[in-house]
Image (cartoon, rainbow, N blue to C red; front, side, top):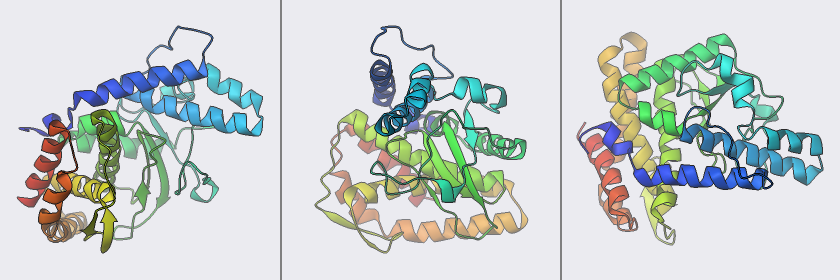
Length: 306
């Protein structure tokens, strides 16, 4: 893996995106063999199709036929019509600001989530610019492909201060979507986007490689300070190294409080990651695909070498 682009280029993911998008469109519109026109990219179509599927399913459960019909006629969950004029970059197709208290929980997710729908509106121009700057910053550090494919919908939640705990997460039923707090700084937002997009990438990669991880074996997570199943442990040993590689790049271009914040973060992550080497090697034995395993090894080793 000579470059970060090599790290994220995993052809089986592309096939998963294409095949699952086609299946979702067929479910939503079984009466027609004609597939909707692509929006920005196969990855964007894949992400948005999952929003349409979740929205249509929820509408069907409640008998809301008007909303159900809307999703059937908008297999991109309205992104082309509602957000095309506000798209600030091909990587950030949709930027929204749902209120955290209003986000539902349901059997599809233990964490709050948000599904694009007929009432979705773009974020403010300020936040769209913030997102665009964050994507640009991540792209300059070599993470453009990762965000283009795995951070299509960005849900910005609470505004916090530098140094505060920032909550961010993904939902497996909504691949390509990320939820996160922010501090109003594109450099920090880029770091957290990379982390969450990394989780989305690994979920897709495991599916594409046909890897079903046996979670009977537990590994100590220094981040959670507890024993975790292999799935969560491998996710952490992939996503945190990505943020370390990005942070090392960002430190060369920052000063003042931001520089000190990022330096402290990188120092903390070095210490945490150093304690995972032996367990990481054991956990990798559960990854049956050589290409995927090589990528997980490469990210981990590069971060250890910082």
